[in-house]
Length: 637
Image (cartoon, rainbow, N blue to C red; front, side, top):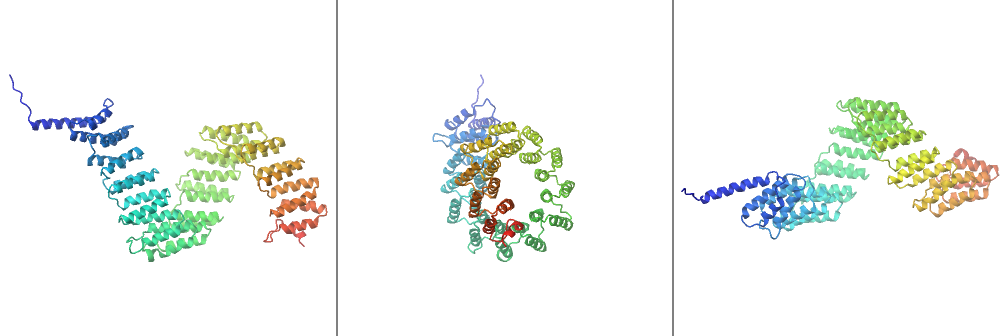
C-alpha cells in the first residue's frame, strides 16, 4: 500500500496561484459565447471565499471588457463596476480598478453617457481620481466635445469637492467647453474659482477668455483681459496667437484702426512678433471694407518686414478686387505674384474667384481659359469650382457650355448637388426649355437627390408660363407629398400663370385660398392681380384690392400705381387718378419713367399740365435728381 503525501502549504499555494492564473486567462481571453459573464460578475462580487482573487479577477474582466469595443462589452463592464460599487459588494474597487476605468474611458472615442459618468463620480467620492492632469483634461474635453459642458462642470466639481488636485489645463478644457456653449456666467464663476484655489492662469487660459470675448464682439472686455494678463501680478506674457485673436476680432467687427493699433504695439508693448496670420486678418478686414489700397499697403509692409505672404493673403486681395469690379487688376496682381514667387501657383480658390468674376463681367473666354489653366497647373477642380463655372455660364444663357462642364464634372468623379441642378433647371426654364428642365428634374431624382422648394417653384412657374396646368397641378401635388408647404412664391407662380392665360377667376380663387393656408400675400402677387384686373376692365376689383392691401399693411410700390394709372387712363377717370397721385405723394413713393410716361401723355392730352407740374415738384427727391429728367424738366420751368 502506497502512502500518499499531502502537499505542503507552499505547493498548495502555488497550485492555487496557477489555477487562478489559468482561470483569469480563461475569463479574460475573448469571452466565448458559452461563458455566462453576468453569473461570473455576480459571483465575484457576492461570494466570500477569496476576496483578493475575486478583486484581481474582477479587474481583469473589467480591463478585458473595456479593451475590446465589441457591442455590449462596455455595458457589461459598467454593470460589473456598478456591482463592485454596490453596498452589498464584497469586492470593493482599488487603485488598479481606478486606473483601468479612468484610463480606458478617457481614451475611448465613444462618448461618456450619463451611466458611465455617474459611475466615475461614485469612484471620485470613494477617493479615486484620474491618474494625472492629462487624463482629467481628456475626460473634461471629451464631455465638452460631445456638447455636455454641464456634465463636465458637474464632474469637475465632484473631483474638486472630493479633494482632488486640479491644475490649469483642466480649467482651460472646461473654459473652452463653456465658451463653446456661450455660458458666460459659469465661465466667470470658473475663473473666480481658479483664483480662489490658487491656480495661476496660463497664457492658454487668457487666450480662451479673449477668444470668447472677441467672438461675442465684446472687444473692450477682451482688451481689459489683455491688460490684466500683462499686469505685474499676472506673471503671464501674451503670445502672438493672443494678439492675433484680438486683431482678428477688431477686424471682423469693422474696428480696423483698433486692429492696426495692436499691430503697431505688438513688439513694443507685448514683445510679440507679427506673423502671416496677423497681416491676413488686417488685409481681410480692409478688403471687406472696400479699402483695397490700404490692404495693398499692408502687404507691402508685410513683405518689407520679411514676413512671407501665403495663398490666403493673395486670395483675400484677389477676392477684394473682384468684388469691386477690378477683375483685370486682380488677375494682374495674381500674375505678378506668380513671377515674384516662383513656387507660388495659387490654388482652386484663387482660380474659382477669378473665373466667377470674369463670368460676372460676361468674359466667358477668359473664364474658360483660367479654368483650363487651373487644371493644367495641377489644381483639381472641386465642386465649388465646377459650380462657379456652371452657375456663371447658366446665368449668361450659355447652357450648352454649362452642360459640357457638367459632363466634364461627372467624368472627373463629381456628382451634381441639388444647388447645381436647381441652377441648370432655372436656366433652362428662363430659355423656355421646359421639357429639358423636366428631364433634369427627373435625372436629379434618379441620382437620389431630393428636390426642394426652389426646384418646385421654378418648374411650377415655367409650366404655368407654358399654360400646361395639368403638369403644374401634378408638380404641386408632388411638392406637398414631399413634405413641402407651398410658399408665397409658389402661389405667386400659380397666380401669374393663370393671369397670363386669361384665367383671372381661377387666379383670384387661388389668391383667396392663401388666407386659409395662412400664407400672407405680398406686393408682387397683388400687383400681378391688379395689372390683370385693369387689363380686363375690372377696375372696381383692382381698387378694392388696393384698399385690401392697405388694410393688411401690404405696401404699395411704384408698379402698383403704374398698373392703376394705366387702367384709369384707359377709362379716362382723371379724378381717381388725382387722388392716387396725392396718395402716392403722401406715401413718398417715387415715380419711375413708366409713371411719368403714362401721366405725361394722359394729363397733357386732357389739359392738366399744372396738376402734373405740381405732382412733379412734390415728387422730386431732396437731392434734386428726378426719375426722368428729360420728361420732368419741361414742367419745372
